[in-house]
Image (cartoon, rainbow, N blue to C red; front, side):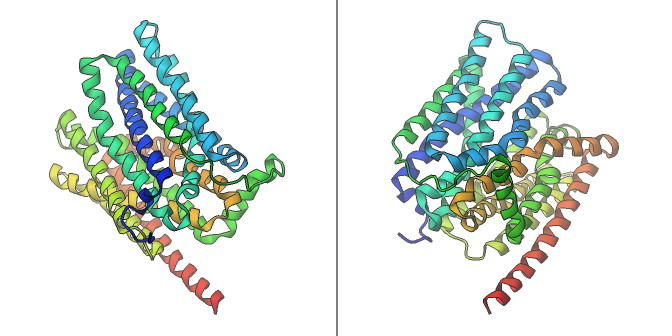
Length: 408
């Protein structure tokens, strides 16, 4: 099997089991996401509480992901992921029961959202670093791309199923089905061989914590990637939270228009994942990341300026393609450049800046939006992303020159 084979990661039995289990589980997760938003709004009629629940889901990622990375380097990753999947059943099941018995309150939702976010903070570093144990370094980009395709495919499937489930079976059914969906991953993981040894030994909490950070600081190429992801997470990716305003105030398109805007972004992200999976491998990852980052940033600026719905839909496809292409390639580059005994901790930093910075980004753009208007706020954010992407591209050129000099 060649690294360049299309969908090469699927040739590995263990990855096939993992991937299909993931697809089922992620569809359930997106179902719960839609149902939970509907539940919170029906309980409170308040966008404020929608924001609180979203923050409760993502704040633990900022707080605990680095610890999750240390745990991923200390225990067998397959066993750790099985544990997180078992724990993930609890909040879904409890929400369904609370709704059925009509004892649900928004505060219970907030607490359970925080619990689920904490589980995710330990799950993500283990899950991401487990991929290389299943397929090897030669196929890691393909595995990451297929993982992204599953995520974005579920992003399309899950909400549709959620809408039908709420309409015909009732709101609690969404949470019960999501709880059941985790069983698919648990079964798949139990059939996977327990690959990879525990290559890291504990040197104390602070020493373990700083070891991964020192590695990133010493590796300039990884450091620059992490910095650009931080900028995108603070100023670029949060734009999706403000799409309802574009749909209602800019395009007068209502809920249907919002659905089109969200779907366009998802379509772009899904296409990026499929393209990378079909390519099998990307020889010049730096150039690909530079192009993808600039594409995302420029398309985001175009979205903020456009007043025509169909044109904005086209630009949103490019934003989805750009950010998904950049993140998948960046993830694989980091994993290939990191030794086995540090991979969990380094990937935890990637996860923290990618998802953990999202609440801060939403807050920053929200302040700008309140003061200057939403379109102006997104325009300013896009310009910041463009400048950061240009600096990243320039930095990558200097790194390649430096590496060439070292080889000489």
